[in-house]
Image 1 (tube, rainbow, N blue to C red):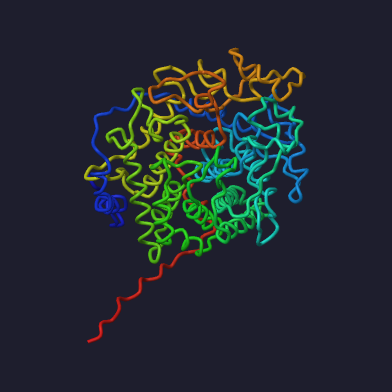
Image 2 (tube, rainbow, N blue to C red):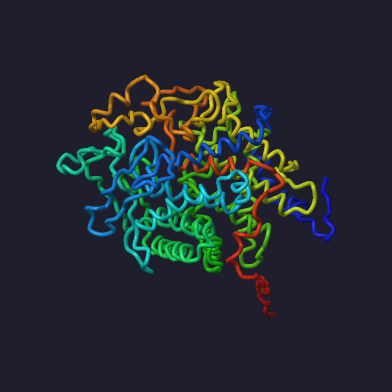
Length: 560
């Protein structure tokens, strides 16, 4: 049933009709199914409790000289010589270790910070209600402070960016004694690393630079009240984005560590994502014009990579589409952006429909976990991002609608936003323990959780004994539980049969990552607290000047 609002506009109802026309392809893209969502309804307080834990994972991943309030008893200062032996940018101390190793990868770390910033911009009131606003901002700043060290942030133009500190693959490096020890080969506490860690720079890395730009631009909105810092972040974001556009190339070219660990499919999605965030950070229309350029959009659409319909550290297209759908719903700038924004809106809507349990675009495990990466290992990183976007999208629709019937069309059928939220809750509840294993996949949450997390610092006793590179292997290989609990770490997750092996040496099950935990944090805060709190509708638009849409050009006159 469609309702008119008092102003006479149809809002979601009229948009729904547009979607109905624009998403008739859904009828073929999505096939009706009888799959039922796993029926779970834990209290909202569980989401807050899990949020407290999930944020602590970032404290455990800190590199460099730790603050007094870090509150992870088994961690201390580490890798204080990072960058010391490089020609330029020789202070690379700080930042975050990526996962269970001590490598600092800028690509996934930047994405993690972007996601955390996005969640703060939208849900700062919920963070405040949970008592975690200062904490999450501190986590973001620790990340952005480090990113600012990895390029010449005071310059307007640059020719290089640091993309990695540490070594993953040390094959074929026997002639170079500096790299005989590697951060994957060695099993050591970061505090005990005594070898020189190589630094990798790139000179044509559009994907990395644009993601870093997105990260700094998003953070500049988070820190808008710290004017000098926010200005510094915006300047850095502009410089990085200019570099990304001028020096084209993928950062993960063949033969690099990046190709092995965080291979980027393309840079077109980062161009749209980075431009969108810079538009919100600066209000400069040139960024919006770029983000909505039809050629760029086509390239991004054809370069989605192996994981379609999911936001991830590799593919940001869906994130950018949802982010710019926000603009369409609340400001609707019209020509010349109208058609691309409508396309983004339709495509985002189609993917949101595909998440619902009534359709079979994505399979589900018997326990109800959506298989966004089609049964491959490490599924949870994709699931948490989908849960965040589904909740956020539903909040957008509700905030844009003046009736009590906010929702969306999937083909000919209309679905309430409550269905989207239920999808998100179902998936997060699965991760928090409502699954066939009755196991929480977030360490420290619930009664049962993994105790053999693939993590060097957590698995080696903090007993003042220094274990060598291979001396720590006994702690990697032991069947005993980790001596240190890495609170809040969301492990990689179960397999397509809901199976899980709590084995330290199998990182397909037991490793946690920055990018995965950032998505978890975002989803948890979105679902936490009172639904009526909703999003912060206006903060993200603060830099955007009043819009007076340009009318489309008149049709060409016909000569007789």
